[in-house]
Length: 476
Ligand SMILES: *Cc1c(COP(=O)(O)O)cnc(C)c1O
Image (cartoon, rainbow, N blue to C red; front, side, top):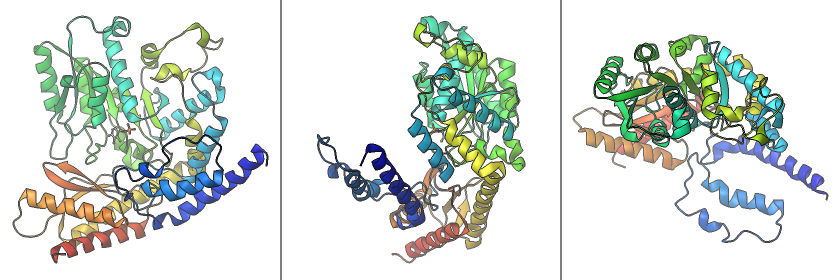
């Protein structure tokens, strides 16, 4: 067989494998039951000197790798936030790897740059984001937030920190809520400010940032000689999907001269639904914004959309122009190398374009609405049962709850019980759930957002949950 013939044969075989995988995915335990080093120890010590057949490689994938895979595309994956994919996304990604283009500048693949600009505009408009914003695809929200912090830094220093590094003794301050994502603290560290410069502002009973506390902290910092630089607000926190008051925070930032970045990594996807238009309230006062189609919008990891109201600031923060990267078109086109950290870039827009065209905006909305309906149905059912308590408002498709039997129980006892429920459920392999801590309470967290989750999966999970609790109550 020629290489091309071999590629066709195995390529077709692999597409069949993928189709079978999706057909049978519910036979696998959702969460891998592998123990540490189990997979490592089954893989040969040394790289092969000689060519091996694709059949052998695929067989080892099935025998050795699959058991160490957690099946994120299993419809009973209720953990974390989803990292969804879909058939159009898989096919788009296949083409991206086939073309293998390195999309650092317009000239290295004009279509990649121009399609990226177009899909960013499509989603900006479909989500009702401010029309003057410019978008770019980053790998993750963590990176997008780092980009925002560096923009804030360079705006403040008039690009002098880029040039000369941190000179004087200026002490900076950053602000997010106590419930904000861990990536923000990591980004503050990476950007050179130190984690001590990050102020975690207290939250209200719905876990949203208290704007009056923010204002007070900024004013205190100013009086104490700090330079308050940037507020990062959350549109949908990871723990409980709390929504910071973006509009009020934006007004405070404008009044006191701070940069305002909005992290909508998960919930920002829902802005595509007109009934969740409120998700975009106040964004006209934001400087930068991120949301991840690679979480909910059926586009496989990684694909994170980053928007800025000030494209010039973004580019000046990151641009480099060595002679070998100069081209004749630099003034007419987007060279995305200058819109973020990486030089080399994958053609990520392609899979997103495949998804948007194959589902259509209405197709995406229809699935999102079903996911939201399933979360509300789940809430109804656990409240009917009577042994569970909601621990945070359910605004989209994340439910935070715990088991709270009648009678007197200390928080520690309840925490242990809920931890046991989580472990028992995950050990069955039939569903996968994770937890968070809300006011010291071990909170079970269910996201009904997997691409293919439907009523039957939620019903099966409800049954499993109640059976698990029944067993524990009867002392098993
Ligand atoms: C998931 C999440 C992130 C991190 O997203 P990555 O793309 O994995 O970096 C940041 N913020 C929030 C609110 C998230 O939910």
